[in-house]
Structures are given as structure tokens and as C-alpha cells.
Image (tube, rainbow over the protein chains, first blue to last red):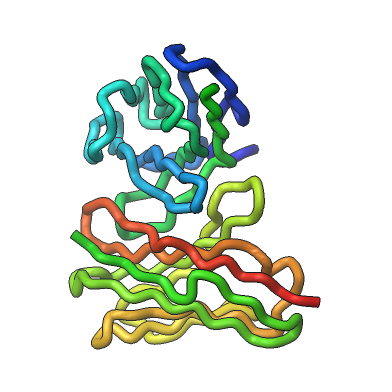
Length: 113
Length: 111
């Protein structure tokens, strides 16, 4: 009965490849997010969706494309992977943006070699 | 946009002692003040939060205090235990806008 689940947990891939990370939440929340956590543990928002609609699109390379087929799912597709994309990516959800706590997934550690 | 600062960046306390982490923010419209705990290999987890109509909230050994005039709020952990070792983040919010996470405080509980 995991609240926010993301797969895979680990992803090792070569530069130039395309990869996807999937996220699903069973909390009935309206808003979902992707965050990137670097090696210094800084958490930076990448995207947020509210009920399948893109709300926040931070300054990330357009190689990153989120897709939300329904409000319970938010996937992240990354094209032409680069070494600097190596990080931990977290999916999260909340009842509403900004005024309610977030529930995070356990993260996907992406290593580009 | 919101400017969030967290202090200290690293904190070491003896087991059984108290720990305090402070978060300052710039947006006076913020009215939701959560703290998250991130253990090794896991995602951040909400541990306590407070809204602007309340000055203090306690949950067993943890508490959050808010000074809205000075625009800061703090996490207090009493009687610290080894399992309190983690990275703690504040993330003030309240507008229908993105929330910014603090840079984190790494708490070490010394035996």
C-alpha cells in the first residue's frame, strides 16, 4: 500500500541514451511533482502538475519532458542523457500546491556513465 | 520569489541533548511551515508542520515554533536518539505557487 511509488529505484545508463522514470500515487492527491536532488542534497523543483495540467516548469533542459496520463501518474522522460543529469530524482504529491505537506517517493538514483 | 535559509548546515549533538534548527524565509505571504526528515537512501518525510495562526506545535519529542513577525520558524528535537540522525529540510509555503526547500541541515547524534 505504498503511497507514492516510483520505478526504477536505480538506473545506470550511458550518455546519449533516453530513459524514463515512472511515478504513481494512490493518495487521491491533485498535485504531483518532480524534484532533483544533487550530491549536496539540495532539492530543486523541476515540474509540477495539477490534475494533469502543467503548473510549474522550471528552467530545466528541454531534454526533460514530464507526462501525466491521469492525476495519479506523473512520468519523467529524459532524452540524450548527459553526465550532469546524474542525481536522485524524487516524485512527490500533495493535496494542493504550497499549502499542504508533500508525500515523497523513495527516489530514483540516476547514474550516467 | 521566496528566499529560504536554513541554519546550521551541520549539527552534532550528544545523544539525549536537544537540537534546534532554524529556517528563515522572505515571503510574508507564507502561511504553511513544514519540516521534513530525510534518512539515508529514502525520500524526505513530513514530520511536523504548523500554520500561521498557531505559534507552536508539539508532537512527542519534536516541536515547531513560528515567529511570523521575524519570518522564521524552528524545529526543536528533545532527548535526541540515534534514529534522529538525518538531513532535515524546511519548506515554507502557502501561496498557490512552488515551494522552495531549504538547503538542509545534517544532524548527527553522537553516542
